[in-house]
Amino acid sequence: MQLRISSLYALFLGLLILCSCSNPKKTSATLLIHGGPIYTVDSTRTTVEAVATKGYTILFAGSLVEAEAYKTEETEIIDLQGKTMTPGLIEGHGHFMGLGYNELNVDLINTTSYQEIVDIVAEAVKTAEPGEWILGRGWHQSKWDALPEDAINGFQTHYKLSQVSPDNPVYLSHASGHAGFANARAMEIAGLQVLAKDGIDKLEVEGGEVMRDKLGQPTGIFNERAQSLIRKHIPENTPEKDRKAFELAVAACHRHGITGFHDAGIGKETIALYEQMKAENKLNVRLYAMLTGWDPELIEEWYKKGPMVDPDNLLTIRSIKLNCDGALGSRGAWLLESYTDRPGHFGHETLPMEVVKETALNGLRNGFQVCAHAIGDRANKEILDRYEAAFTELPDLKTDHRFRIEHAQHLHPDDIPRFAGLGVIPAMQAVHLSSDRPWAIDRLGEKRIKEGAYMWQDLLKSGIPVVNGTDVPVEPLNPIASFYASVSRKTLKGLPEGGFEPEQKMTRAQALRSYTLDAAYGAFEENIKGSISVGKLADFTIYNQDLMTVEEDKLLETEVEMTIFNGEVVYSKKE
Image (cartoon, rainbow, N blue to C red; front, side, top):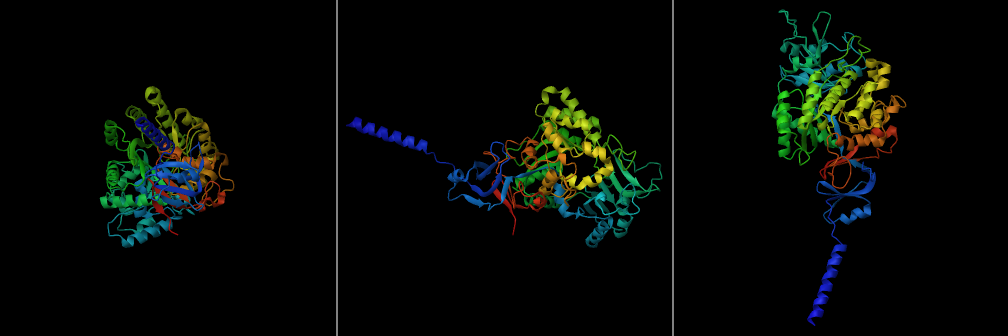
């Protein structure tokens, strides 16, 4: 009898174990999203019906029926109601604190004339204390309706600006950041208003240019490294102002669906600010920060301690930013042949090329990615040459280096295949074409434009990914505008019909990937973000319409409806 009971008990226990094994309890989801097109940027399954998350990671992506198995009473449900979702967007090249400060200082990005700038500064003077600096950014003389009659080398002179601001020093950065415009008071503070009588020319700066009138007096325009003549006299920002700018930048990212940001060049003070914001749980954007190459001591310090790859995936520092030439707008981009609209002028080499070679070698030795700014064809060629020399010298260390060239805007045709051949990633901001192409042809001429400018498709076809972005605050932080430029190659006014050099357009899939998975790849982060895949971070962007199928002339009407960061809604558009 005892044997029979034992046998029955063993049978019951076995059935219980069998049942528990065949019906495992599934993990409950924190968030379940469904009800509209969801583009994953995952090649194994490009679209899904639903996504479930658990905390800050993706738990499931697939059919709604399967996703609902993860739903419990505690699961938050987001019904897209026909709206579209993609992975969280990544700004592949921008200036985070510049974004914040652009919202605090005078914003000139939409100005269309010199007079408009004068009027804006005149208004700022009314509320400024005497002697207080008035700072701004965003003007671009090539985007104005017309240049003033007294323009020199294609730039305005300071006289009208100085008339409305006699007691306040004024410094207004060009949209590109590669030139600046100072009034008489600012130049007086810098000791530059009157020509030196001691025979020493204070206006000569290696790697830069001070524009002068016929009498040799400064016009107020300071190009490239000459900007330091004025900038060193501008008072440093206060910690309170830095924190405010940081908070404004985070909020701006959320409004635009940006969950990751490649910050192109920061110094010691900014690093300390970011670390403090992280400690206070205010770092609600994933920052991939590049150390500024202008501070050799900082670089040496980081060589010794090595890259910082954040286990929390919020603040990673493992790259170095070098500034090697200027911008086309200020005629500072370094060219192989002179500017079509300024014969004899080739732009500026703003950093010695031996520094690029040395940094490339040290980057390989110490595990740091090198990201070099290059817009002109000569700058791109020279940097590729230095990278290649470093790879040849240290062949065992070049594996998966992911060195980058930031902008890669104008290339010699011979250098286009070298990117893929060397494994160098071009980080290109498509919206620059919309803003610059109408006047860039005056700088470079038709042949150079057609053969080597904004060569997205040729680079992609060669086998190298393209990282997209806006270069904010050079352009507004608007990924929709850059997406539109990527696929249309038109100005934001929809011109010309068919787009500029249409053979270089990206497909919509390529454009979305350049803002998500390829941007993540450019930061060694493709395994944790950039696509809607199980186990990756729960960062998503939700739009009011399907940007992958809507008619091209309606693309710019796309708006960000919601941003989800770390599995939590951080922005929701108010109706």
